[in-house]
Length: 221
Image: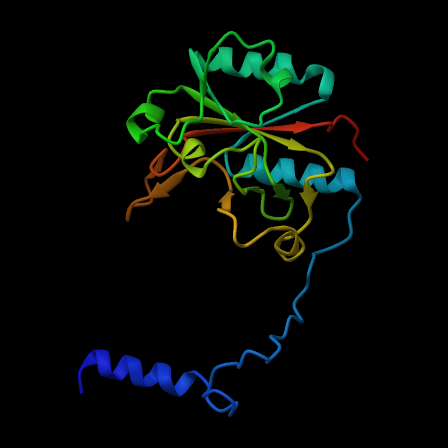
């Protein structure tokens, strides 16, 4: 018996036959036990935002806080500090976000190649939500986020998270709010990897620099 035959035989034994309920695998009607903790601890919305900020920083993301009035100037200063001459703009990004920025706007086009996107200095997006316990920002390709590739190719990504509205405490609380048919990208800090000697290299399969703006996060407690 070949390796392929052995693998297929194991799959057949694991998958229940139609109408019998037999086999090692769970049938389509079987319920999956979800008796794990859905969230670790109890927090106020402000405490959840603070935890998100701490975990983002732990992953080497740069975290900023501002309100609606200060957002445009903050984004302009972040792009200027980066020395960016161009900024990639998703189709549904609120226009006032970049109203104070001097950079040339590059609009997301389906025809844009990876090489063209690689020449763009920065990209500014919104997000679908953020997870406090893991320091994760989730994108789902919404109008203010654009296609997945525009947040993976440019070397500098500025992501705006509305707080506390877009912040959830844990992954189990996040999953029911996300559409699994959308192109979900889960981001925990800038792109990085380590070789066998644990030498960290950033910017391998995504932006080398991630800056997260917590919009509306001025009050603690």
